Length: 284
Figure 1: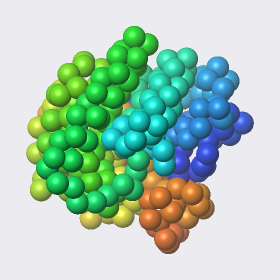
Figure 2: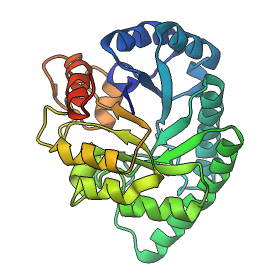
Figure 3: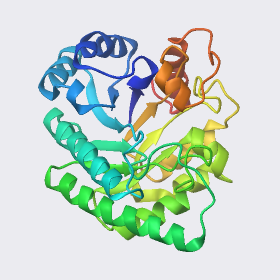
Figure 4: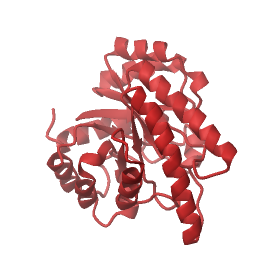
């Protein structure tokens, strides 16, 4: 397992020009990987970002999708096409960077919530499965995994729990389409986070370690011992990534409902978070 940080903590949108300084800082703090959040593929030159990571001595472990308005596998035909175009571009950029996976809520625009009847839910599920199969085949041909993330009920009404996520990826039925779990969302939706991780088992392809308040992991109310034990029990080999947001990045702060400073200093989240994770996982 390697520890990483999502770039949303420091910038939105991420651009090629930001890569050298940000990657160097993360490597200096001791992170082995970086999760690059790409809102607009045109902002990123994969060759230059890959070179910046190599120079800093940090791996690009994942690309995080930003499912904004108009990118929706359960939406209109136009929204589905836009989501496919965007996500296929991320897959292509991941392949060019030597990045093994694209992660996040790869099914629907974040913030779409509502009470749907069973017929509508079934129709949405069918649309998402069909679109993920197409995207998954595109990614498989390029050696890239897709890791699909359930979000909490306030951010989506489509996929909230590990059980729902497993049902979806099993319906897609491609070996490179896997599950992505996040302790922040699980803290709201799961009865037992460790049990959910164990249930995910070999299907778990990516993991976000987030504080219950979106702050420092390990500086929150969560009991990390059973979570770490569960990840070790299933022999999880993927990255453990800190994903957090601050009021400094206005667009993302609004989307993630960050209305106050979660920590006194933004740098406390990665620095203290990495230290806490190393201790929890028994790593130096």
